[in-house]
Length: 387
Figure 1 (cartoon, helix red, strand yellow):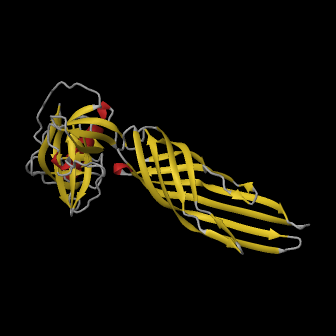
Figure 2: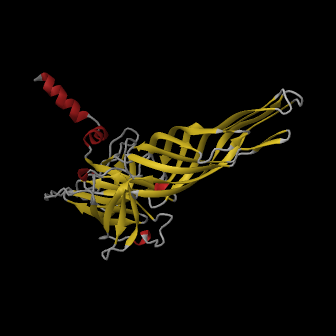
């Protein structure tokens, strides 16, 4: 009994600020955080209605944000816009509290409530994520009535259509709530009708795929034509480990941890003899990398254009023995431009087969009276596994 009395006494004597901090209600979480000029905009998913104009507190630092208009509601969950000046440390998934942090270790003064504390009960049906509806629009951000309960994930891409079926643009999700999700509206570079900014509540959305951020795979290739080196045909080869990263709207970057190359060696008898002339050539295009743009991303068939560069190393050796003797050697190392085009299949899926053409603007390597033209075109096949 004495121990119980001491415990109750310590709780009664504890500062009000400590109690408020420990028992402050958790209302929900932030499902979208993005910058808008000099302020931070948010979309909040909460389990009870909030008072517009009041402040709630988010994250480990309990940053204060001002509650805006009610954007949408699904079952017992409410979705509000919110904002705060500057760039506080807030991220997707941070919890929301109605209780402010204590000031200078003192007590917390609670005036008007941030939440209304209404009891609600509604039935909810979990449909597939393939189709949905725009529930709110806030600038270039919109919400759809699909969330984690529908197996929606970040970077899922939806096509937006109005009630008549007219295409408006794309919505890429960045904040996933339980029953609704938020994302950014945009038009693809190749869209001739640029109506994403006209998206409105009630527009339909259809799942198009997911933007796979990273990709890792293999690629190999050959030249279609084998050039002559003296009296012999040169060999060519290419390939390596392919790594990629994909940005919004199908923009991306790739690097091949490998090389494309061509080499040849030819020996010819000197007339009148005895004597031999040897021609030895090699051109290597090492670690080619480029920036690329996939069109109609993430459609099942997505052509792309690309431009980049590659490290070049080449040599041209021309040696003669016998009646006419000479030894002419030249080599060159530099960085050369590279252009390309190709097509990827299922770029929004895990397995992405591909075909591409690479043009390397290799330099001329002149050894005495002999010139080696290293300009090359390689045809490549490969695949990426993406996640």
